[in-house]
Length: 342
Image (cartoon, rainbow, N blue to C red; front, side):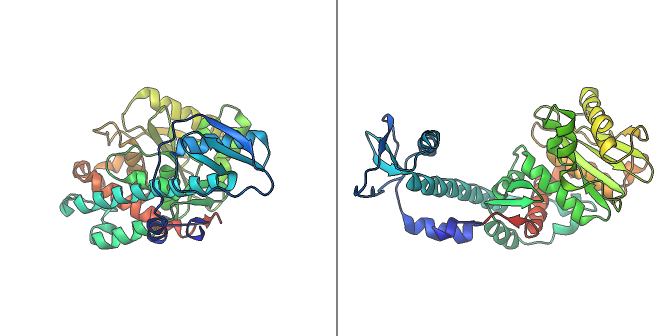
């Protein structure tokens, strides 16, 4: 099982899984635990139950806090704790690789007009599909860490098609922007998930945004199954707020979090002036996270509300697929700098 221990990609894991060749079986019988007696033969695994059944058995064994137990189903037979953990790993890897295949199919079918892409988003227009495919196949699908923040590489595949971006993809996009532009810090978006003020502050500081070398600090927060963004320009003491739906209620939530948390983290309490950016509005129900990253990058590239039309083009609405692919590729390239979970 070395192919699935530590970091793994579809290119390293898929040949192993093909050779394993254990069929999937649907377990419907009741689950019970029995003692694994001394001298009893280790069960032989001839098929792998569905993931829900595997994890139910693991959880039941964990609650007993005993290692000498066997899980048993009437219509399956026995499995040890170690076998269940290995089967969990195998099924998870198979599911992750199926997402890789979906991403590769999407890349193969993607079409866009190069003329519709504007700076600073042109850096991937000449990259071949073969190059993108190879990068996706080599993506670490398992765990990695940014500081103490746990990420799952497979979550970056949310950038494909028209999927709603989850927090791991958002964090990956923010960290990519931090590495692409100078003097940029990132507030951990997950701070907004907590209620206690001290926990909000600790989480917001997770990526060390208060480094004195940073001139701009960015983040994207979830305001209720929807993403909204902000950028703090430290030298000018201005904060730019952006909601892809252009709703005052969402802007109020973001502004309140910046006032109560971000200003304290950056040592700028009661010093910021706020400005709402209204030059982009999402046209679907699932690309809010993408537009937050796009708008933040335009701000980092030099755009401001007063000069927005010098940078923005409505043609970007026509190349959503390309923008998703670009962010996916740049986040994959960034992942090599993350600490992997062995």
